[in-house]
Length: 397
Image (cartoon, rainbow, N blue to C red; front, side, top):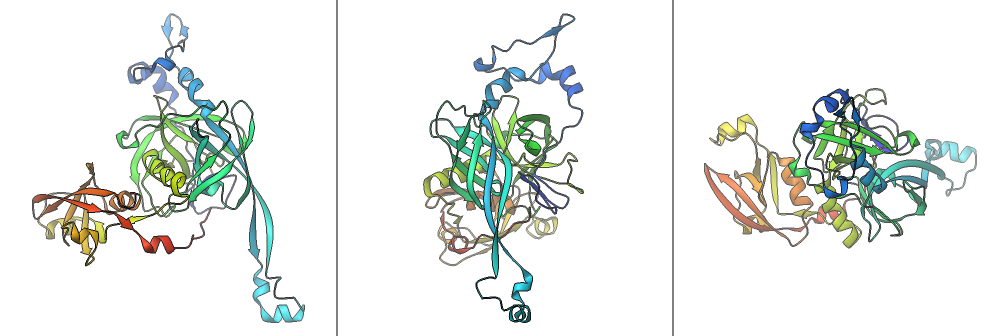
């Protein structure tokens, strides 16, 4: 499954009308063949056993040894579910009276099937990370491992705001994909997408990180996407985006496409965000959103000029709620937040994500620029009651 923006749901891939959860791969092979030796990091001991073939006496770069180790940790997911559909005619009083229809015949149920991908992230507990839209409305979830074992999965939790879900399968002879650090990614880093496109079975594609921190796409409530040109197609949703060390750095989620096909613009949820969501889902079965009581906005050139700051990025605090943790922590309207817990803040969206996914009761350290002088403030995160009461909103697939 893969989210496709502004397009109809396909296998299990999000697509935004010009958008879907998928990755495409330009002609990367030539570059890999000519310069991969210099680009590859020092291999881990687990990968050292891989033999690099030689052609004409020269070593030919290959990712096969690394993939041989991690691909058993990427699984295929098959979902059966039921959805309620409402016939518009049933809402017409004349139609109902003419056909003498009883009141309880306003909706009907339809069985659905979908396929997607997932990543084993804890071999001991059997936890599998995937996209929330892959298992939406699921009544039965079946996971197929690379060695063709079919296992019934239990849904531990699903978060619609980040489109992340956690499944659990029997912890028997499982291989977990090691987690990387998505905060260390740079544009231009080589990445591989592993998943189950179009239900074909496990497939590996390659590309680079095209951009970081993509937001405002309207795919999810909390967006901080990794953009990549590694090929993703319907069925790739929930699959792994890994670096050349074999570390999981993202969960493939959506693609941008004008006609439902891959054009080289795909999006993945950063693993650091997915890990925060997973921690809460496994602990509480839901994500408890955090807040500190501020209204924020991006720093624009106009605001920067009005604030007499030379900075070009950050999150401007437009308002501080009276009696909120932010006020108690010493924050003021007009402060420019430049870092949260030591991580540089580039936009209001990024700050919202960081605070919203923090655990309730945690203390976050904010560094703000106040009229050219830096100040630090320790603020305790409280439960976001509005988010807790918010009903799950329908999403276009």
